[in-house]
Image 1 (cartoon, rainbow, N blue to C red):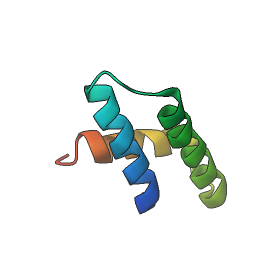
Image 2: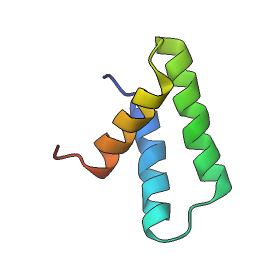
Image 3: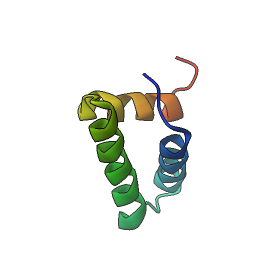
Length: 62
């Protein structure tokens, strides 16, 4: 699945905040909004897109 770089950067920021125990509602909302936009633009399944983004950021070796 082709994931836009800006979406990956948003998820990286969110993941860093999660790991620091400081995830903000604004960061979480920004990631979710961009996932929704990309899914609508590409016709991708939103759930599968979100899982692919998380996997790419949190488990890049797999």
